[in-house]
Length: 179
Image (cartoon, rainbow, N blue to C red; front, side):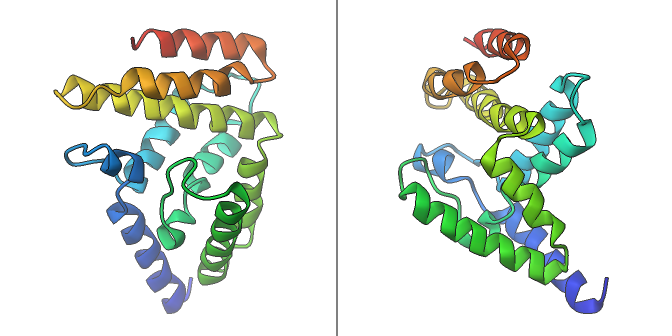
């Protein structure tokens, strides 16, 4: 990496570490997680829960890349923007990340995640919601607002939609253990 790429990387990572997730901010959670916190948590859950038939390295890459554009376009609450507008903003921001780092393969990973058509992308897309439920449950356990059921109800359809029905059942069982 040249000096400019290193500077761009420092900026990207710093922005990920300081961008507080909008859903938690809106719900007035004290000290809400950052996008970097969420990406780490998602990657850790992915590592622990990925079935053997999936490419774990691909899953981890998808988990780490899935929210990178938010460093430049912001984190949006579902329904805040029209899906096409959100997609356009995120794709433009992801293109900036790719250009800044000279890593075009990051766009391929981001697109794979967004389309969630491969088994790996589908899995990480589902685990992304499961992580939100884990986080809601953690905040709730610290005398925060009651959030677990709200987030679980939005995660359940995503988990149920997985093509791998055995995996779907296992993840739903984990989800239901939270409440």
